[in-house]
Length: 373
Ligand SMILES: Cc1cc2nc3c(=O)[nH]c(=O)nc-3n(C[C@H](O)[C@H](O)[C@H](O)COP(=O)(O)OP(=O)(O)OC[C@H]3O[C@@H](n4cnc5c(N)ncnc54)[C@H](O)[C@@H]3O)c2cc1C
Image (cartoon, protein in one colour):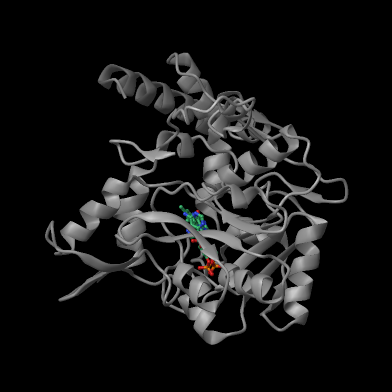
């Protein structure tokens, strides 16, 4: 996976020059979430039309105040990754963190407190978080976007593997272009050529500020401006037609458990972070309960619809995916196959909204075909 001129991760073909019986291109076509994504249906799970299958739903946070503060929301994924490695439940946890040039995001290995804390917080830039083959090893755990969680699960099933690494994921509104990060840093007053010493998208508070540092200055802006005005609008097309922003293929899927206004819209006031957490599998349930017994996490059980109620971006997108797919197809665009998601049923719940989605998507797909993108 390499950064494209548009600032997104794209697959590239590279030959090692060695003869091999593996066919990575065939594997890729079978598992790439740009081609196919399925919604798992574990036998004992409850099902929510917006959130997928789940065994339990929680509001949780790290008991260690420093971890809770540094994390994107409740510091839950950081606390879990640290505890998994310290308790020997995972040899390594693969996540994402800043590169040596901190405006870029790379796959990182979490093995101790230092590496867990360095990776805390969300990275709203393109990254291939499963780039290392260690991410396929069942002795490890991975933290990854829902689309990569789906790809990992499909790849291991395709290969007939019976075990998989523990998969931790998060709700995902999509991946912004790398150019949006670079432009925002510039807009905030760091001139081209001035070397960054740090860049975080959020965390160090909830939601925390987008902050870039150099040897001589620190610049920052709030979450509403960074995500809402600058990064979010550059999210790639594939993410706009994603039915699985909620991490259905994971064992545990975390999200912001926002406070909302009377219309259900998240309030981004700074506060003590809280994560919503969906337990997707028995393995995820065992891990969560063991982490709580070990005193790593605390929180309370909540009803799953309470999570959907504070995630209007996720619910809105899922309701519109079917219309957007139809519109894109009408404009001659190929679209991914989505298996087992209740997309048509959600679309038919509000036919007028769906007609608007079809028209808007057809118009945009035609316009981008004319531009050649
Ligand atoms: C691109 C993106 C879009 C998101 N959209 C939403 C959304 O719509 N709604 C919502 O509620 N939440 C969204 N989140 C998730 C949210 O920002 C938090 O990750 C989540 O609430 C868990 O917080 P935490 O405090 O438990 O995680 P933390 O304790 O901060 O741990 C985060 C962990 O995730 C890993 N990580 C960070 N960025 C990436 C990445 N890009 N790829 C792989 N691993 C990564 C890090 O290695 C770190 O260990 C998004 C996150 C990302 C990266």
